[in-house]
Every structure is written in C-alpha cells, then in structure tokens.
Length: 348
Image (cartoon, rainbow, N blue to C red):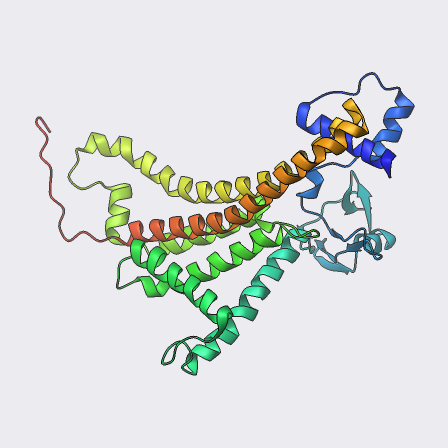
C-alpha cells in the first residue's frame, strides 16, 4: 500500500505545487504514470461509476449514440467497442469507420446523480404533499421532525425568496419551479460529499441548463416595461439609447451566465480543495519521512473535516443563492411602472 500512497503523493505534489519530475528516467516516469491518481478526474464527468474498493469496483454506464441516422444502445463502453461499430480514441468512443457521432445521449455520472437528486426530491415531497392535502400541516399542525423540517424549508423559500423578490400577485406562479430548483440543487450538492458520490453541479453543463431554464422563464414572463428598458429607455435622448441598448441586451445574458458559473465554480473547487489537503499527508511523507507525515496527519485530517463541514454549508448556501437570484431576475423583469416620467435634458 505504501508504494501506492507515495505515487499518490507525487501526483498531488504536481497538482498543488507544479513541481515537475524531470529528474526521473523514462522507465520510472512510465511506471509512475500507470499508477498516478489525477485529482481533477475525480470531479470530471465519466461513463462509469467508481465504487472501489467495493467488490464490484467500477460500474459501466449505458452508452447511447445517434450515428448515421441510426440509434445505437449499448449497456457499457466495453459493449460499444466490442460491437466493432465503434472504437476508442484518446479515451473517447468514436465510430470505427472514422465518422462522427451526431448526438451522444449516453448516461454519465453527472446525469446519474442529477436523476438521484430529482428522485430524492420527488420521494420526499410527493408524500408530504399528499399528507398536506389530507389536512396534516394545513388544518392540523405538522407531525414529526421530518415533515416539520421540510415544511419549514419550503416556507423559507416561499416567504424569504419568492415573496421578497417577485410581486405578490405573481409569486405563487413561480414557487413550484423555485422550490424544486432549491431542493434539487441542494441534494446534488450534498450527494457530492458522499464517498462514492459526484456533484452534478460541478459540471458547467448542468448549471448552464439550470441557468438557461431561469433565463427562459424570466424572458417569457417579462413585462412590457422590461422590454422598453432594454430596447427603448423612455425619457432619455436618442443618442443615449444607441449606447445603452447593446449594454442592456448583453446584460440579459450575463445574468444567467453568472448564475451558471457561480454554482459550478464553488462546487468544483470544494472537492478539489479537500483532496489537496489530504494529499499534503503524502507530500510530507515523501519530503520528510513517515514520522513527520503521521505526526502532521492529525492537523491535515482535522482541516479537511473542517472544510467538509464548510462545504456542506456551502451546498445549502449555493442552492439558496441560485434560487434567490433567479427570483430576483424574474421579479425585476415582471416589475411594472404605472407611469414613466419624461426627463428633460438641457439641449436635448
């Protein structure tokens, strides 16, 4: 086990400090590459679910391709390459005849954990909704810690997020979306903290899809005043409109872009930080020997646990920030002004 830990140490050292192993011979470098553990690969999207050191190890996920106007479905990457229709090149599945896959609909780990999060949300709230229809929590007080906890969370999203940012007569229309987004994002973030879990929100395509949904809802429900402030700017000179129009138009897209990047970057960086801190144990073992590594391991493990607790809090915080900003953007777009006061500019 010790040789493996030393190799892990060298990999972490490269990732955290940028030290190069240029002094190693070619044979030693090749041997090292075979056993090197890449931290970034732990948070990347994969088509196999790593469950090691459990007996069944890695579980390959289904591969689905649309190629040459035909749909190909395989139970795994191994099955896809064994069919001889596809092969692997640079760790990617490609058509054996040199063509290009039209659409890749394969099941990946990030998609899998997105489904897990959505399933958990439904398994929790559908029974609670049924209990609420029967009067438990509506006509009678909620029963049990479970119902009280999630009802309090739902009321928080309703009162502190929706009502605070969306006009009173419209907030109920968007409450289902915002509440669903809050709890699904929360579960996606928290599942990434599990030993064999993956944070789907550490994938920019997932966060971009969520931000795109917010963008579509915002623009579809925008008021006339919103579009006037983007393309017309009542009460300002024409030459100012020429300057402001492209700025406001670009601003329509920078808001969802910020939503996507903020959530993605925070969830991606957290897990990398935990791996890097634990890796310092192996760094110290290689640099100063096992005694120093064992002695300092208490500090690094304690620090990693502290970051883990902070990351659990960040998982909730980032879900709140996402839905709060979504509600704010929706509310701003729906804001109506009864009157527009024309501003007179000297010399206009």
